[in-house]
Length: 544
Image (tube, rainbow, N blue to C red; front, side):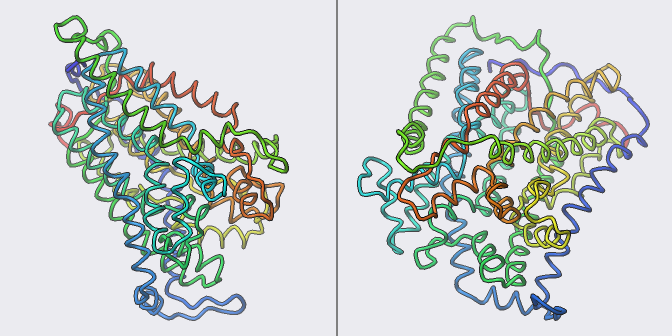
């Protein structure tokens, strides 16, 4: 291995466990308000016959019998799962192999790989990518983009959409997986850490596939003849197009149950394996293999692997790149104005700061102060059912709440109503746990300050995800003046015009530049020093 092992573990008592419970309280309240309550409301709606006017009737499990008894639901379920197969293989095969090649190649190839992979993270926009592929339906289309022709025929549309999603997401999936596996190669328990990380990556990919929405809605709207319906599109169609709220809530409940099981499984893997994230000290973060014999060959292998993946990623991203740099057409959409930028990124940033900030406080309490001793990370089970839940399964209840408050078509409504980022909570808890077990410093300098950059990095990541989301702003903002970039692009694509919109609307240069600078700096100065370890520690041997 090119990376040093973790330093000797120590244990330090920081503060009273009461402070840990106090820091956990905002996350518990936020989860109750923004996750538990909408989930309960969704389940209750699925047990009723909802009327637009007048009281609703309780019908028990009749809606489940109706939805689950329809062949369309099972067809959508199978198709949705099929969309996750190839991205899953990319994540669990290409990701660890590239991570291994980069880690063994030494410091500069590994850091170069992190920079290259960061490009895919900051430029990926589902709606923009989908619109780029739709250019293949034009008579003058040529090259890889003509694959989209298969979307016209119900017999070939499912397979075509599967291939498009694989191509469109290859770069971002490969980047996320590789960056997840790299720290596992630096922690001293490589085999078991890689297996544990691999399990988490696989569960996350399945959960993401189950919530596929933006690309499907943009490219096919579930057609032709319902051949490309996903579970999220079925839920959206029932609730917001057919106004059968109870059936939409039923589908949302089924999706939520599956995602809840996946989330609980992921937390159990992390807690049962004793997973923790540590930071390699700067003085130990050099690459001792750099001067050993054969290091040149290892570096060459890493560089070749990175180049191959980068070339494949560029080829598959060519439909998006060619559309991005294509000359503007007469009548095409103008570049993003200030209002669209503000509508897109201000609510995204606000939502990220709140949800990650609350998660960070809870992580300090659970992972740093350890209120239940060595069993503290099992407290994450209280949040686990919503680890992989996005806005989709919660959208039925949250939209009804926003409407009842009279906030539809308001700027405030654009902020996603999730007060706790559970993925951020898991990552930050594992980091605080690792820091607390290996420092002889006080709580502030030993845990809070070293973990604060990770909170900022996760806030940036959540901001990017929120800004590229299509579903929530599509539901709560009908006024053109409140349209976010993804909604504006979708509207322009479905409008009565022969000109294609400017897909740069979703990735304005200023946003990409700021995000890229932040992520590259984080990769080189912070993330490259992270190590994931599993198994027991001296801290785990202490009494609970």
